[in-house]
Length: 130
Image (cartoon, rainbow, N blue to C red; front, side, top):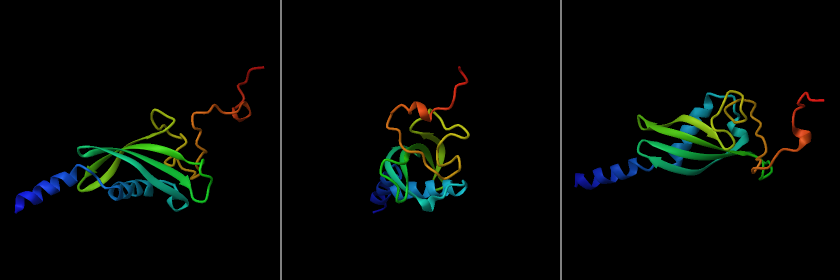
């Protein structure tokens, strides 16, 4: 009778629930200046790797256009029965640097999703060339 329970517990341990992942993300965001109440946060994929998982999350402003928002990729790890963020990587950068456009850098405003498009020349800063 104990063996089936142990097998069931082992199977559940390898596959984190979206709710457990979501709670770990919310715990992480509490320590930032991000206004979580002003955003919709959608866990779009979870790829478990033992006690770690690669997680993709989409952040969009509540009531904003569907095209506005951004996706972030997290590496999370289970620690003492809870999921915690280990590293963050947004969809446009190889790694998140201080001041990069992401909800962890502060400001709370989310840039529109670029979908791989080049910015308009009017949107670029001046180069100093004459």
